[in-house]
Image 1 (tube, rainbow, N blue to C red):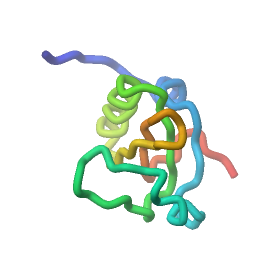
Image 2 (cartoon, rainbow, N blue to C red):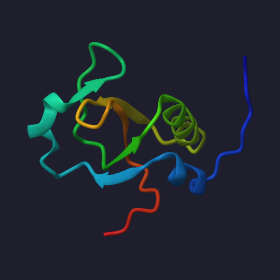
Image 3 (cartoon, rainbow, N blue to C red):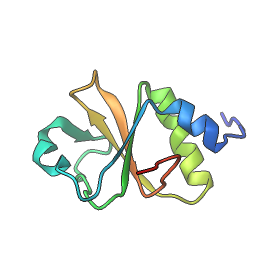
Image 4 (tube, rainbow, N blue to C red):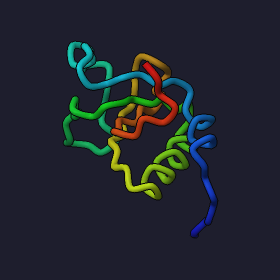
Length: 97
């Protein structure tokens, strides 16, 4: 089945519940907190930002948006937050320092 949707940057913001800087932080010391969605792959700590999604459906839509604007990403299960899915990417979204 194929579904066609127009997802905007505002939709992406609503699909994600939290956003943090990933690169240059201490996430690596919390590596046991994350499990890769794709087995036998490692967590890449070089991405710039992390976004959290409450549900797998939210993740699928957010990931589709990133793909549509040519931003690669990596997905992780966050076992510290009810198995939320964390999206690692260089897409800044509405990030501001």
